[in-house]
Image (cartoon, rainbow, N blue to C red):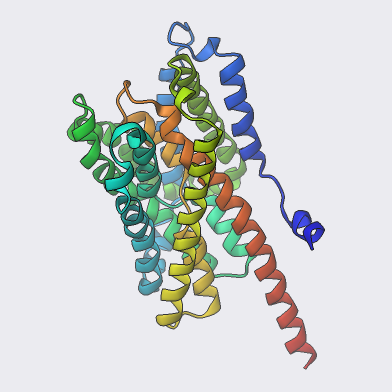
Length: 336
């Protein structure tokens, strides 16, 4: 049984790349250090704008309009992503939201307030034989909603903690670095959208490269400032338990609500897979814009990176099993 389980688990190469980048940040910090002559900050800012320009370029206005029909499914997914997640974390604010654990709690809130991810949601839903068009719509629209809602959730507590934080400044940055590139991409979709679809794998590679660059820089600064000194193995274990608990609580809650709403199997799969995802791309980008320089970005990204690896691991196993079960039932029905 263990052997069969391990055979289904495939380590995501991007997760491995993240681990490697963190190791490089620890042992080879020169390029990302505060004294470095390499303008990684400028490079990553330009990269962020290009990521969201390509994101808009790949969004089809026609598909978004078509996707609006399945509104119950879409509402459930977006409520899960932007309401259920943050409310769970907020419930623990009285216990962990102050004192030594404040930054860790804020990191969990940041993770909880992020939008769903596009690529892995669609791939996993397809693998599990779910509603792929609905997955594309939900993952895409989630990224746009997150531009507005994520700063609102996090800003409530950042304004109290960081005196230099300004929600208006954050939205100006989001407007110039993210929203305007998305709008420009949407405008050019009819002309260049086919090329974005054709070279989608290269654009995904570019996205991940920029994310790895930002992660490297963030962890270099965190190691320089010794922000991880207060996080021992016990704390890391507890953080991961928290990540697992949130994932499964959301997953089974969505499943329960889907059954109550009478969703068929395909829509239930889509709701559970899209509604439990959190985007590492948006998280890494937003962390650069939302949090002031005085905040330990490495700590802020820690729960998100653990959640990213966890969601890929668990959902890939579930998707493979669901997809195989669907194929087996289809063969049985055809054989009569």
